[in-house]
Image (cartoon, rainbow, N blue to C red):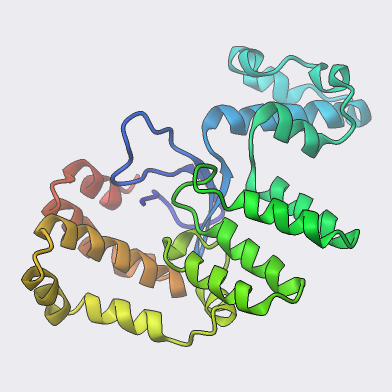
Length: 259
C-alpha cells in the first residue's frame, strides 16, 4: 500500500500488487494509517451528492452539484433521494449507492443503543465479509469492539487477533488499541522485527520462499511497524528498495515521489 502524503488529506490508495482492473479506493490519511471512505471514486462522489441533496432542503445550496457537473449527473440526479421516499440517508446510501464503513458501523451502534444485540452482531459479521472491503482490517477491529461491548470477550480476542493479520495501517485506530483486545503485548512487533533481521531473511530463503516474495513481505512489515508510531518517513527509502527488488519499479518511484 502506498500514499503520497501523510496528514489530514483525502487520497486514492494504490495497492502495490492489486489485481487487474481493481479500482483504487478513496481513503483519509491519518498518522497511524488510513480510513476507508469509499471503495471507488464514483461511490465517493455519489455519496457526497446524496448527502448534499438531503441537506439542501435545509440550506438551499447547490454548490456541490454545480462543481460535480457532468460527472455528477451520471451518478445522481437532484431530487432522487426525496423521490425514493426513503427518509434515512444511511439506508438510502446502503441500498442505492454502496457499502461504507462508517455507515455500517453507525447501523451497528444504533442496534446496540436499542438493546438489539442480535441485530448488532449480525450486521457486524456482515461488515467483515471479505468481499466487501478486501485488504482492510477495520471491519474486524470494529467487530471485536462490538463483541467486547456485548460481553463476548473470548470471541472479541479472536476477532482482534484476526484483524492484526491484515495490514496494521488499515486498522482504523492505533495498533496498541487492537493489541489490547487481542491480549497481546509486543509479541507481534517482536515477531516482525525478527523477520526483518538478516537471520529472518536467511531463514525464509532456506525454507524456499522466493526472493521476490521476501522483498514484498519486508515492505509490508516495514509499513506495519511504521504505522505503530506514525514514523513513515523513516522507512520510505528501504520500502522503495524492496519494491525494486520485487520488480515493481513504478511502485518504487511512486513511494519516493514528492511534488
